[in-house]
Amino acid sequence: MNDEHDFREHAGFWIRLGAVLLDGLIIHIPIAIIFFLITGDINTEWMDTWVYTLLNEAYLTIVPVLWGGYVIGKRICGIRIKRIDGKKLTLLTMILREVIGLYLLSMVTFGISMIVSAIMVGAGKQKRGLHDLIAGTYVARNNY
Image (tube, rainbow, N blue to C red; front, side, top):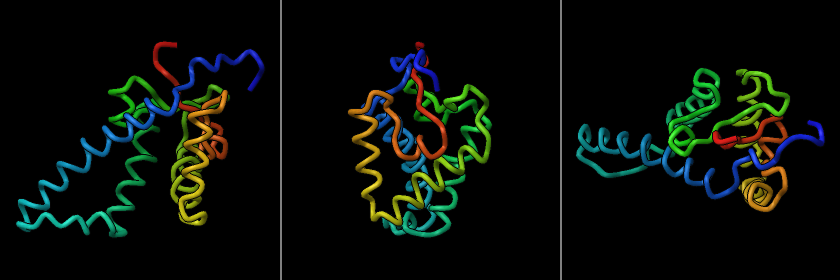
């Protein structure tokens, strides 16, 4: 990345949090309703299963590669994941970002990496979390 890069393009903490919350509502509430209709139970233990984790990580990893850096929440909020070098997102880039940089790093650090990343996105000039640094990505606002 060169010094001429326009950091105003980078999406900050609140818009990224909004996108994550929207994804949660749009993806998880319908699943919970389907689960309730099938079982008659409002239990959310299904979210603690390896199947749910695998499906969620697959969504967060594969959809941005196929959909130009977007997942549903990011599309609604007008932000998307981009590579710092300007190239197209690849499956390897997204595995580094989502699986290694977010999921596994969070597990190994007992969530501390998530707090550090939130501070970096909220207060840093580049608005990039640890997962972005690992993968060479950032989250861009569409109006730039």
